[in-house]
Image (cartoon, rainbow, N blue to C red; front, side):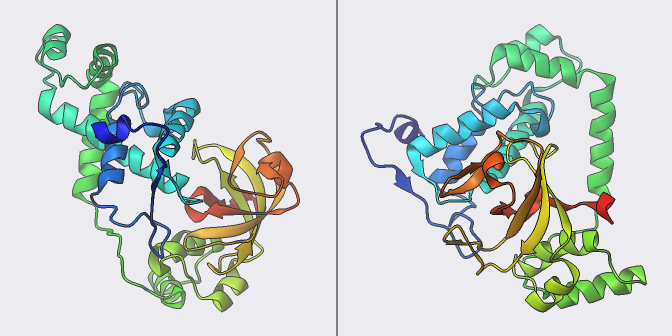
Length: 289
């Protein structure tokens, strides 16, 4: 990764090619994903003493994207995929450290001396302190039990939206709600739900919009306008796994839009207008119904 980290700013940025799902090609292993992995293990950008990714400071996430954009010419709209990829690699890095180096029977001093040299000493010490807490141990056991009994598996086949709706209705014994349909449609239909069914059940529903940098924070409220990948928003097609939303209420005016166009840069600019937003950063506003 030295050739990427040390790449002179005078050289053109490295181009990234995406597939028809809006994901970088070769996401399992290439120089780009390796670079994201090195970023996830870099304590300057991804401190390991943060309890979970949701609590990772927003400024850190912005710094990560800035560093990446200095090296790579990211296609519009893959920031969310990029941060999710880093988050997974960061969690795996912490899990690897715990599996390889952590022993609750040893003193903190010994653990510090035996740590992976890539882990910052101060951060690692705070991480060990967290692992030693009863709360952390209980959480670990709970997660192990959850993984052991997990029976749901994500599929990659192209199940139609109509099949998803029928399956949910058969399992539950009654028609699925808009919330259940919205959560299921992209997962099973690969971002391309049947337009006539979507228009009937989902288009026009109230939507809560979550922050790119903190998915626990609601930044705006709006109305779902389109889920058709071919819909043009700001002279650019939505593409798979994106939605068109009309902004009705802005809660975080300074929050940046992922896809900028014309004078629309922040949510305060988009009030009353249409924006593109990733489906996994949207949720149906259940309080509305």
